[in-house]
Image: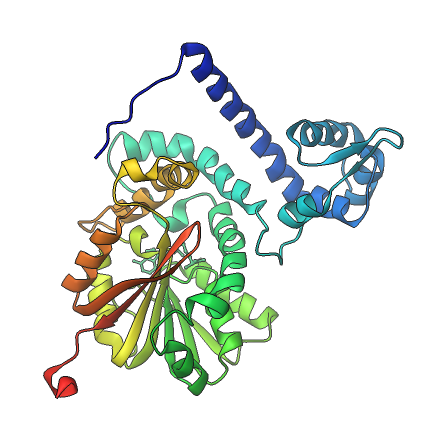
Length: 362
Ligand SMILES: C[S@@+](CC[C@H](N)C(=O)[O-])C[C@H]1O[C@@H](n2cnc3c(N)ncnc32)[C@H](O)[C@@H]1O
């Protein structure tokens, strides 16, 4: 362990807080530009504020102020000769291309949820220690989560996470039963269903509204005949003999992740695999003194802890769970092996396999 000491002057620290405040203020303009389609319209063609307002059905004076905020923040360029705002390739990819793995405007949707929920979390949760269910947060939470995580699943799940697991890719290609637990709007479930047509994929979530949206997404993507979505908790979802059970960024949100993991362990076929994707984190808070830790501890306070507390279990893990804690918890739940199979800057990908019975070993 290392004590973190302050080594800055008041002026230096004030400058840092002021800079953070500017970024926070600007985040609201990113949310607005994303919501009103301003970035997408600019990605199609440069525009003066008036032209952009015409194209997006908005007011020119407000759009001018928005555009100047983007220019001041380096989120778009301004051609002095024509007065047109424009996005360069990187800006267009990150702010306007929902199909790119680098799409990140959705970060601000989730950041907005923290502010929209702040009064309630302060008044009802932090003061009293009570919880707030996932579905009781601001409605932007579910769509924001889907938009933020989907590009990562599209980019990584089939190309690198599944191949990093022992024997899972071949099993999926041949055809096995797959459960995606805590599936939300089904972004990861649909990636799996599309990639492995011989496998039977089902998504479970305890939030009925999320399951409805997931069913709609499946129909929109022409996958409704390959995938099912059902309302169930992680501790009681139906079915057995699954070749793969996945939990993407949801195990730490549960009040009883141990009970969920134990149920998952018994639902697996012999030789089956539990895939757990969790936010990147080190072993202690001292290892998490970085942008990723700052982001996830903040999300944990407003989103993950209240969800876990509302479920009434004995765990309130938050998103920065040390790997050693996951290992201990999964071994206690009945798994016999546990390892980190892959990672990205934001995710750790864990593989766990049930303990083999004496009959299997012999
Ligand atoms: C951060 S979201 C992740 C959603 C989805 N896996 C994804 O990656 O896009 C967490 C999800 O876990 C679900 N969840 C939380 N506790 C649950 C429980 N005990 N049983 C089933 N689902 C749960 C929530 O409803 C929410 O959809």
